[in-house]
Image 1 (cartoon, rainbow, N blue to C red):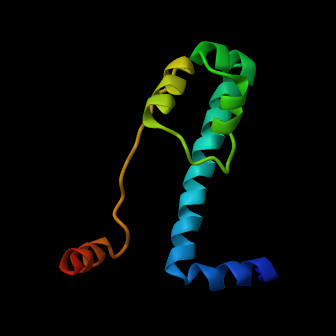
Image 2 (cartoon, rainbow, N blue to C red):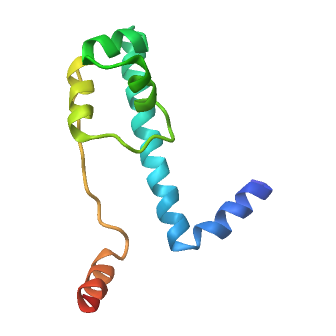
Length: 109
């Protein structure tokens, strides 16, 4: 596979731990927004109809489905899940070198 300029740019910037963390967080928000939109579409609902079920505005549903939005609260995600006959499943996964980072932070504190 031929690497594009973007591929090379991304590889280079992912070596920076701060950039990599922001990139991962953006991907998580993207996943949440896509899942909400997919569930809503599968249920045959418009954003306005889902908003009515949630007792909120269409603009709020639009925000929840926006890949750039990172203000999802657990309580709102649970309300969305209930309205769309789904459930929220949240997991914490350790980073590759999580134990070492935790010990380093503990020593510094």
